[in-house]
Amino acid sequence: MKILVVEDDRLNMKLYCDVLSMNGFEPIKSRNGLDAVALAEQHAPAAILMDMRLPYKNGLEITSDLKSSVLAADIPVIALTGFAAPEHRDLCLKGGCDAYISKPVSIWDLVTSISRIVGRPEPRWKLHNKQTIPPAPPAPELSTPDNLQAF
Image (cartoon, rainbow, N blue to C red):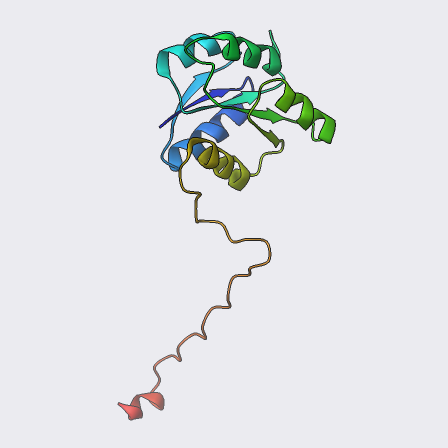
């Protein structure tokens, strides 16, 4: 399942693409967003991860361009932004984004949000906050002449 990643920061791009690949998605990269509409029309991804701060056009402008495209209008867009205030979330959603994730991105939130948007089961590899890892069982005793008598 293809996911278009629109991100200008190299480290974030690598992180998102690595996480997507490890979770069975096929990332498609757009470094500046100017080619996002063409890539979306060409590859028909299941969703688009959209950074909101890009060098030439901002993420909301690109999202508007995507929503105006006959071929890309129905592709869900997930906003990625360092602005975490409720008004920024509302701005992204009103601007055409279908979901919102604030940076720094939780890997769990990233994979879960994408899975929900594209209709895949959510990953099961995360312990929830209230769960703890059970303690390890006690280590077996070392074999010594005294405890070998039981055999």
